[in-house]
Length: 216
Ligand SMILES: [Zn+2]
Ligand SMILES: [Zn+2]
Image (tube, rainbow, N blue to C red; front, top):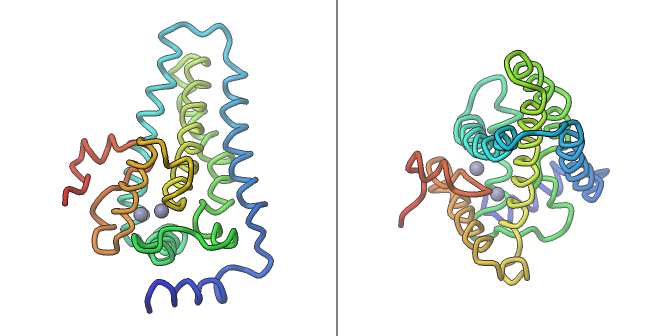
């Protein structure tokens, strides 16, 4: 089955008829924007050193998402595969390839953005788990800034990933950095290369550090 046939099949058989693309996008972006605002609201007269938690967690976010992308979304792990590998490697990557990287209609957002339940799970389970584990040994300002960094990174990921799937002529892609990241992601959508190269979306730090940046 080629990409166009897969798209046709996916639209008719997998995307539910009741799917509301703008509700999905609004949910993901509203939750991911409100989380950092709420966490930053909690901090009280932070010191310069405490503020450093934010950039540190934006760096750790790059590493964490790299690991999740490379080892959970591109390796078939029994039990969790239907929620990880199958959705990413067998749906997102077959629907969007390096030759057909753009969406045709908002319904295609179904397999472009993270499922709403991933964002909900991040807010309801992952962030509280991070909060309680960090609270044992770090001051509260640092904990709130860590949570802000983690949720901000998720928001950046969704945004940059969306930009990477925009048409080439889109005004946002006049920015060189965005164009560069789009090309980086485009290589990752080549079915021959996807399991091995270019796992970063927001900025390519972990790909550089772990030598998974593709060099033709
Ligand atoms: Zn993609
Ligand atoms: Zn991938």
